[in-house]
Length: 143
Image (tube, rainbow, N blue to C red; front, side, top):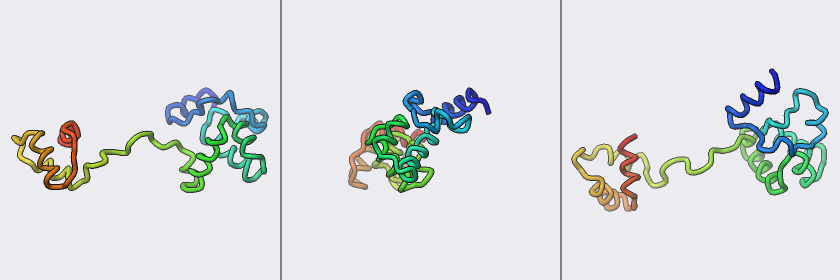
């Protein structure tokens, strides 16, 4: 696979290293085609390997791979918890509605169509003891 094609695939998958020019580790300079500084997951893995196997200091390993010391510890923690999957970036932001459980959504969907959103907001508050915004209810009904 050519470097251009590899870069395009990494970009499409959201795995492109934000600063490949900052990767100065020897492996990425002299390691041949396999080691690709634009591959964020590979760079993270090699950064951890440099420290844990190669006994390079955290500061030096992070700097050589384009990360800060704090970034190193975040990567190490994610790897420790999830293994290789921890090297993938997690989707940012909320994972979904915080207050709307399946039970609440079912209740909203089972309400008669003629019921106003304002009335549904009030009913959810009374029945489930939670306060929801009218837009939250509207979005739940659209799903």
